[in-house]
Amino acid sequence: MGNILNEIRRPIEIPLSRKLLNSTLLFMLGIILGIISKLLDTTLSNSLPYYLEILDLKNFFSRMGVWIFLAVVISLYSKSPIRSAINVFLFFVGMVGGYYLYTILIAGFFPKSYMTIWIGITVISPLLAFVCWYAKGKGIISISTASIIFIFISRQSFTFGFWYFDISYIINCYFG
Image 1 (cartoon, one colour):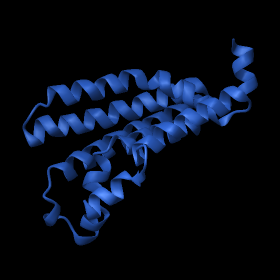
Image 2 (cartoon, rainbow, N blue to C red; image 1 turned 45 degrees about the vertical axis):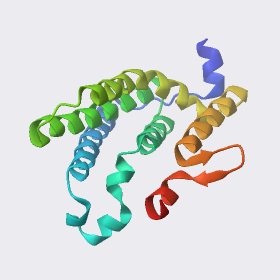
Image 3 (cartoon, rainbow, N blue to C red; image 1 turned 180 degrees about the vertical axis):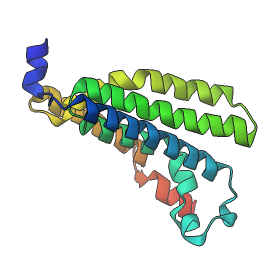
Image 4 (cartoon, rainbow, N blue to C red; image 1 turned 45 degrees about the horizontal axis):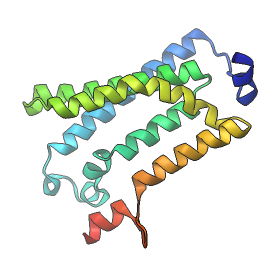
């Protein structure tokens, strides 16, 4: 099985110190983005600076598509499928941990159902990252994996119907 996977994409070996540094930085990035996301959720839009109101980061970070996109980017640019799984898992642990620690400790509530969903996503993220890593390789398996990722991210960004195709976020945000 290893030979087949190595034909799709070969892992690159990096020193242990760099592995630890990269994983630590991704974990910290997850914490920071989780806290920023929750901070924006708990702040009134009109009390934010004007440029942040216009960028609408509050709604941007509350959509699942941005987190999926970041996980795919982390996965594709990791040096091996195992590193990909570890990096994405640590990113999600940091993001979910930061988000819900802020929710519980600062905002003062405990959203059990949403927390359970995000913990579930965090638990399966290493497996999905492992598979996604091969999307940057060669061959039919790589093309198929990349196509599935593209379809899934497109589904997060666009609304499809029998007679229509629509950009879901921009239209809803500014004209809906």
